[in-house]
Length: 149
Ligand SMILES: Cc1cc2nc3c(=O)[nH]c(=O)nc-3n(C[C@H](O)[C@H](O)[C@H](O)COP(=O)(O)O)c2cc1C
Image (cartoon, rainbow, N blue to C red; front, top):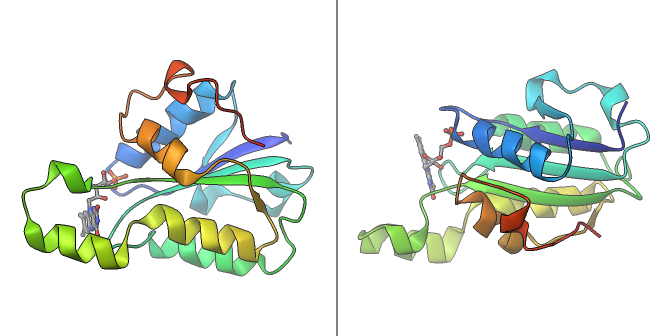
């Protein structure tokens, strides 16, 4: 049992890499793939980070279903944050993708919304965490001293 936990999903391994780097950057935080998380993992939790690849502008079904399964108040008192992997808008020449992203966004905000529904408080904006996450090389330094909560 740990007070902090990183939960992620990943199809091709990129989000897994970032999740591990985030776990290290925040100080040896346990990192678990969403299908390995148990109810006991959430006991006594104070900080939770949840990450997913963006697929079709959303988190993976596994992340969505998991967060939905927790129900209201499951994460009351927990400070949470979301991150995702994505194709950043400024890294694509596709006007269509930019247009679609402007409407539908990325996975992080959707994870945040689900976290709020479980009673968690957003302790660090996904925008701040996400911009560091996109660098893959996620380090304590790239957090610029940011703390959750
Ligand atoms: C089927 C599919 C759909 C995707 N949809 C999006 C998307 O809507 N927006 C985006 O920014 N990136 C999208 N991507 C890119 C992935 O988010 C990106 O490649 C990510 O690094 C994959 O993470 P993973 O290796 O952990 O699976 C998509 C990739 C795939 C294969």
